[in-house]
Structure formats: C-alpha cells, structure tokens
Amino acid sequence: MQAKQLGDQLLSASQDVPAQQKLIQENHLQWQDVTQATRDGENASEAINQLAFNLPQPGAKIGQSLDNGDYVLVNLLKINDGKLTSLDNEQRASITQQIEASYGLMDYDLYINALLSKANVVKH
Image (cartoon, rainbow, N blue to C red; front, side, top):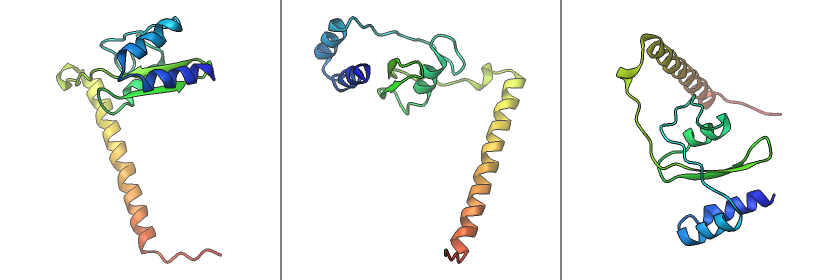
C-alpha cells in the first residue's frame, strides 16, 4: 500500500521535476529507461511492456500494482512507428489474419447490435 501511495505521489509530482527528484532520492528509487522496446521484447517484464504499449500517446503515464506486489510507474516518452517493409512474409500474414479476425468480430458485434436494436425484448 505504501508503494502505491508513493507511486501516486510521483505521478502527481511529474510536472514538478524538483519535487519528483526529491521523492526519488528520499526513497532511494531510480527510473529504469527502456529504449527501442518491442511488444515481445525482453528489455522489461511482460507486465510493464503491456502497460507501456497500452498507453495512448507520448507523455501518458500510469502506475499499477504488479502480481508480485511491486508497484510500477510507466512514463511513455516516444512511439516509434513500425515499418511494414521490415517484416517478413510470415509476420505480414500473421498481421493480416489478426486484422481479418478483428473485422470479423466487429461485423458480428454490429450485426447483433442491429438485431437487438430492432427487437422487442420483454423481460419478466
């Protein structure tokens, strides 16, 4: 619980760099920089990587408890766009399948929602 409180303090002090640095020094903490991270990279734990890749844009921050009881802060500094030309045929096929599956699920959801919007449902 103390780790979460400290994490929340660090997040709220993120605009006040001297206050944030003071909290970091007082609690013997340090930032761990991860550069050129990939979704399946090994530079950070899977949970931290997932948090980072779910942030919407550079400048976004999040704090969260991990399964092992640790509390982590993630501050997204930069997003490097992927390059389709750097993928091999198998990777491209995998992405194509994922997109097709997503479109299929979306079409099905839209179909069900359209049916439900036209239905006269009576609950007893």
